[in-house]
Image 1 (tube, helix red, strand yellow):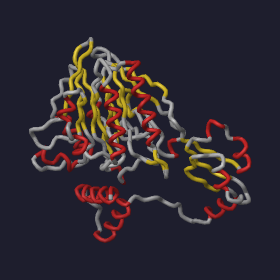
Image 2 (spheres, rainbow, N blue to C red):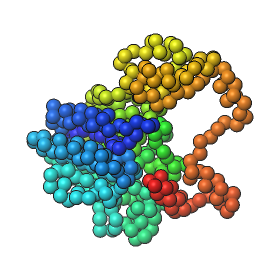
Image 3 (cartoon, helix red, strand yellow):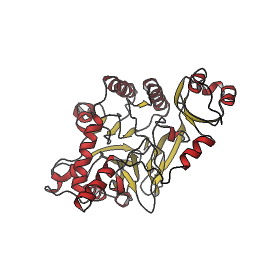
Image 4 (cartoon, helix red, strand yellow):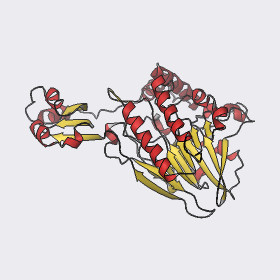
Length: 384
């Protein structure tokens, strides 16, 4: 069984003030070309299809075109999709039964009651059947009706209980597709500026319930990495979505399952973005003269080190670079100014700020259900 592991497409996202429409169409086109050449048994997309829960018509069109091009390949390649925290579960689930007849399997919502279960898709290869369990992004409150109105204690408890109730046959080959922030075995995955997490690690999920799967295809983190063991992996994004990702290597992850008991293999294949994200540092004159032609259309973050502030630096840089994300100054004057601050500046999230205020007023920390309500309010505000 050979399948592509993709996640966090974030279709419709902007990088600073720039639309990424052309960049996303280009990179998804490269995935289609890889599919044409390699003919995988399946393509798995582990959440965050869109960048917003209410995607634009343009974003929906980009994803529709991607699925249409994949569906035109023969023999048909099944596509397995779950929703992420950026997606609207209800919108992504729309027409999922009809799409399932075309072997496009979508799990937008987690089980809603005791009668519902994780969506399972069974595929076959020369060694027999492989069961793919599609587990969308969840919060403890999402699955309260599955457990007779009882809200699991935390994210780890919610994921553990929702998996355990499936009574998975571990004699078979099983793959889990999930979109959460997993930690475990002393491992805390690397994150970047484009990822937002709850304060105090309340959304962390322990990997213990995942250890018996042949492979766990994760989404949520933008940097490719394993979590504790080789077969539990984030594949990362196809494109760089922040300056903090400039040093990351983006690639296509191709997973190969052999017969039961054999080690799962993961291969990576290079991706060729329309534009890269790069950081440059130096004085203005050097940068204007030395930057190669191949970088001038990339998305760039520039740090100028001139001791004397140059005349209209951004205007001069725009004569060389077509996609400037930011221009910063780092010299003796700016460093001395920063050194004047006695306390380290801490970027706190709205949840942390409100939590500190609540504790000061009420004399206690927010409870898990209270955090859930506040997170929902903050998400609604962000969407507006």
